Structures are given as C-alpha cells and as structure tokens.
Image (cartoon, rainbow, N blue to C red; front, side, top):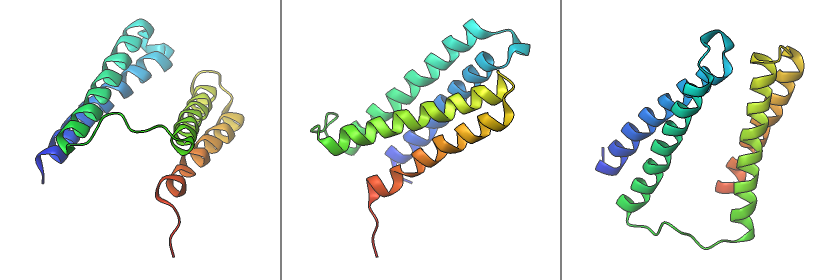
Amino acid sequence: MKKKNFVTLILSTVGGLIFALGMCMCLLPEWNAFSQGIIAGAVGAVILLIMAIVRVKMSGKRIIVKLSGKTVGTIALSVAGALILGVGMCMVMVWDLMIPGIAVGIAGIIALLCLIPLCRGIKD
C-alpha cells in the first residue's frame, strides 16, 4: 500500500466516523446532544477536508483545478444529491414520515448514482 493511500485511509476513517457520530447526535432526540453533535460534525468535516488536501498534496497535483461547466455541474449534482438524501433521512428519523422519507432518500441516491457516469463516462 502506498503511503498516500494509507494516510487517506486513516484520515477518511477517523473523519467519517466523527462526522457520522455528530450527525447521529444531532438527529436522535433521545441523546439530547444537538449542540455537541454540531461541533462533532464540524470537526469530522474539517478532518475530511484536511484529508482531501493532504491527498492532493501527496499526489503532487495542484489543489485548484480549472473551473469548467462540467466541474460546476458535477459539484452542483453532488451537493443536491447529498442534500436530498439527507432530507429523506430527516423525514424518516426525525419527522416520522416513513414512506415519503424513503422515496425522497431514494431520489437522492439516484442523483448520487448519476455522478458515476458523469465522472467516469460510459464505455463499451
């Protein structure tokens, strides 16, 4: 395993776990830890951002890429898909809207799945 892959593995695992724990703290009212969950989620997001920067630096690439329409569209689709999936999760977990929440979550998953052919393309 290359060094950059190992560092990415460690940082993404730690950041992802802290971020997920923070989101659980925010979304589960039984835990009564909303404020602490926001802090934990923000810390996890910062660790994930650091992981992305470290990965790019270790790869020897530039951090800033040239902005094109495809790049902006890909970013917009990924943000929209993640938000739609998150709203579906909130509908199920917080607002007790099981069936509509599942439908909204599936729509978010489909939006995120559309990123695969957009980024990689479809080949024969």
